[in-house]
Image (cartoon, rainbow, N blue to C red; front, side):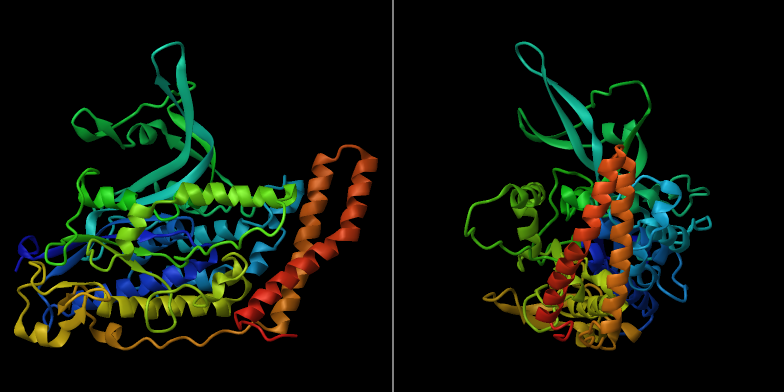
Length: 524
């Protein structure tokens, strides 16, 4: 049967922001690609189903955007000895590099609390420009669309004319970038731009250095919006009110998770080829779907206030409230979590049987999801858990009704080997399901649950030294660069020398408490 006549299920991947939880996403993706490799290699087997799966779009934010870029390298070079996703997320990034002092050399201005130089190193070494023409796996669409979200500090200006005097002006700070990968391309002028956008999307505000991106105005002008027209919803394009004639718009960009941590709608509109057209949702009709990988699906609820809200406490709470509200998209997330909808699926961490739960599942969950940077053992655990969870997902969740035309005409051997019966949700009827990516070869061998890692005293001592050196250097540089009065400068240096140790001790106390609570460290 030719590819044109082969029943095809169309797939989009949505990779949520996750800070150091990107190691989990990396594990999920590596296993997914390996399972698709094995599925394609098994085509001549009598028990291999006759349908195919095609990845058309990948979108990501923050750690997810970095995984988008790394996935492209992994897909283009399937014969590498070590996965780029594993190399970048498990082997190359750590607290030791983030607490280095390379960014402060030659009296450079302080731009972040952590040293972002390691991100440039990883991008250079793990994302080198590939040779052309590109060779995409059979299960990847040509072209493949890659979408990434950032937050830009300058803001794109828009003006809306209104009846009366003047017009209403506003600025858009949520940015979207698209890169389209074509096998026939003989040159990749956008490759450096893709690497910079990956890093920019993960530039956690204040923690990591913002990135300066020069983006063609045409990208902003091509952005589509859904508006309520005379005959219902319609797609419109709104031209920004550009301040000058420069064909490019220059701005600093930071973590896209500020505004869109799970870019589901971005992928859905691209996968459906029409922002107004929804994908079929029923188990017997679905022909395309999104898989969202979200290492921290559960946000949690703050405890009720017990006293007045002071000025110092109010600022971080208000910033967090604005970010969480900007991310709030209940209609999108509820569809992904609804077990009776087959156009959206979710892979989230779990170490035990039952519903997905990120609580206690990831070692990187401590310190506001920065905990994975503390130890390679933490990141390795999360990567391997991602592989295990992806295998479980493909085996029992990523499936359609046996009556769906995509999988309806399986051979008897394929049905005996892969069809299973299960309930739909908690109370639905039992019915026959057929997995969309059946497991063959090494992908069918059960992935063991990784052992829970342990933080050691040696690792703690190394962190204390790195934290002391980095904090002293950052505060010292800030004082020298911004305190022009010699007496003020001397006083600030003395004040930090007297109080800095207490701030570091408090941070280590909080960290150790979390590690002990999550059984990642023994009480000492």
